[in-house]
Amino acid sequence: KTIADLGDLRGKRVLVRSDFNVPLDGSTITDDGRIRAALPTLKKLVDAGARVIITAHLGRPKGEPDPKYTLAPVATRLEELLGASVTLAGDVVGDSAKDAVAQLTDGNVVLLENIRFDARETSKVDSEREELARELGAFADFFVSDGFGVVHRKQASVYDVARVVPAAVGDLVQKEVESLSKATTNPERPYAVVLGGSKVSDKLGVIGNLLNKADRLLIGGGMLFTFLAAKGYSVGNSLLEEDQIETVKGYLDTAEKNGVEIVLPVDIIVAPEFKADAPATVVAADAIPDGQMGLDIGPESQKLFAAKLSDAKTIVWNGPAGVFEFDAFAGGTRAVAQGIIDATAAGAFSVVGGGDSAAAVRILGFDEAGFSHISTGGGASLEFLEGKELPGIAVLDA
Ligand code: 3PG
Image 1 (cartoon, rainbow, N blue to C red):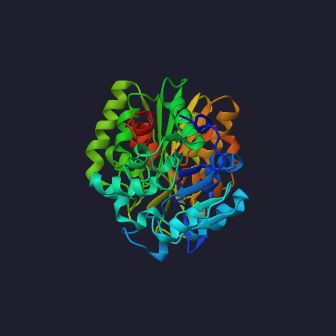
Image 2: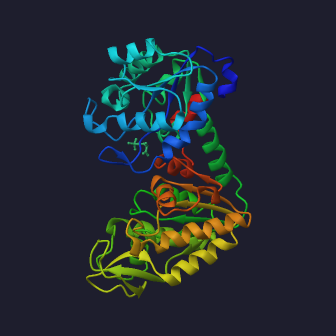
Image 3: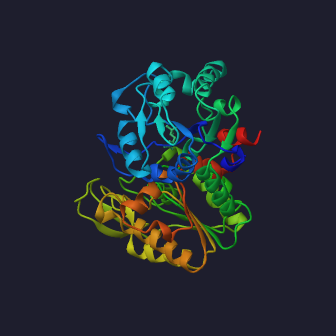
């Protein structure tokens, strides 16, 4: 069911699950991409005259109110972007939330306080989550699931509530599922995947799955050093997951058997410490000196990655190629972003998945329109790429 299938929504109370888990510096939102991505669904409901109640989480508070994790900055930003009144309730399902919902008028919005202030949200005990879901459900005539970034979580406001209130899929979740499916089901070839980010161990499932699907895997980010170590190179003080070296050796063997090309950097930008102004040097990937750590892929690797992307017809990118937050180590991530933009302009279908790579695109000033789709999901988009069933989506199909 989509929002259109819910019929005339004027005066109807619609509970929306959004993912407003945005990065904050104090109370300043440093990337509002997830709030912007939620706007099409919210605008549609507001314009239809619905009374909109939003539930969302921020960070990982410990199941009780914690001012550090208030959704207040989100409420302010959302009101600016949405152009409708947004009232932040002082609690999740308590008296403040009940009052705010009772006073809600057509075309206006109540944002319930951080759902993770209630321990039942993330409880492993079904009956506890179901109880919270019923309390949330009592606020609404309909439920719209639109927090793509949390659909991999079996939580009260994501999963259980969809079983107690007539539910529909929101525009964002629909668009995410369509785009990620297009990139993973019968992708047009060559199919190239760029993986980065700090840890191999976060990407084990994805890599395993892609070794049966992709034509090329380009490896950057902190995880690349475990690949270099698996090839027998020394990596100095670079990030290394020693306990994953054997697994990575297995990947290299499987890739060879399956005819999947693993593209590793040929040069690395190293520095003696993890600092924005640390002196940077370019070294060969098999000659990282002791006492130095790799913080980005080098200029030859940037050219190599761009070449491997240039003729791809489907591209998925998950994880920055280097420490893009520091200008001296942003070149690799820039080259990947530009390579994907060029390939997209030449007709490739491209998806950027993962919180960090999506943030990198915006922080480095690239035009989001240069990519076919930028996912709002971190863990959710990874689990999608792994081919796992996502509870928040499965429950809508049930
Ligand atoms: C995310 O940031 O990936 C989502 O908001 C999910 O957050 P979580 O990993 O704390 O469940």
